[in-house]
Length: 297
Image (cartoon, rainbow, N blue to C red; front, side, top):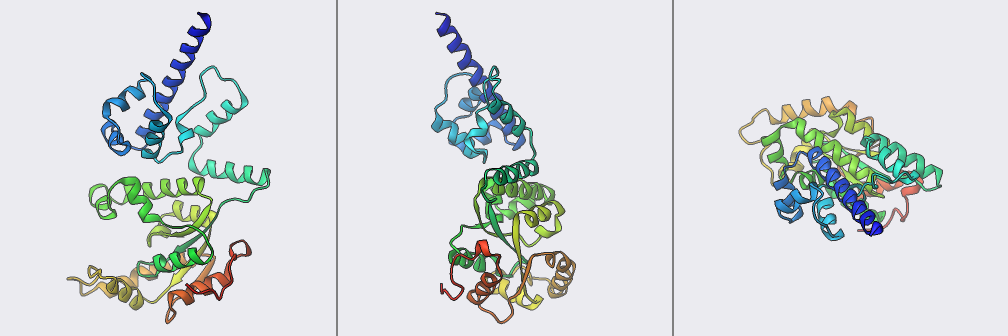
């Protein structure tokens, strides 16, 4: 009887802890119960019961909640309140760390146990620089994952970039950008990252990228940027704006000192994407060069 009571008490304590953690992470993500339920394909009533520590929850459903919060499953399962183990203490310490502190802790642990930190190659430059095209080909050549930061941000927000700016403004986008980068760098083992053209203007995001990535500026002239954007079918830059080219030149001039902080600058003028990829591979630090530079797509 006493054993059964202890078991039930432990179970209740665990469910309460999970519920408290889910509610904290939901609030941190600025989601309502209804919004989290929709993302997780669960009912609002179920989310309410989960946060209240009522009823049981399967690992499968808890994984759905974790995915909806863009969090690893383990972050939703805190140690029991009576767990005084070293692992439990470390869990609580890590749960209070910022994204930057988690990155530092991971780097320290990686060095401590003899495993290299995640490796990323970040492509920067204005819209029309060729980051998506070059990035996808580069990833194939060096056998790494290709990631577009703006696509991850849209997935996290559940709406398009245009809607993010129209509904919430630039500051909200910047917060999403920072949190998305932090999540990527703490959960991924590396890849080729195509960044948004304005990332370098946010000091926190740009410092994070420079610290965790080998950075490559795909440099082109204003005329080339405009031509490539128009070739992609986007006529907005020129529509009803006779000063579009002048504004583009001014924008590039303002950002060039920031882009120039990249580890490598590749001039893309008069070069095919494949040729640009070959140039990048030839200049990459040795850990990234896993294929011959004369390979063809």
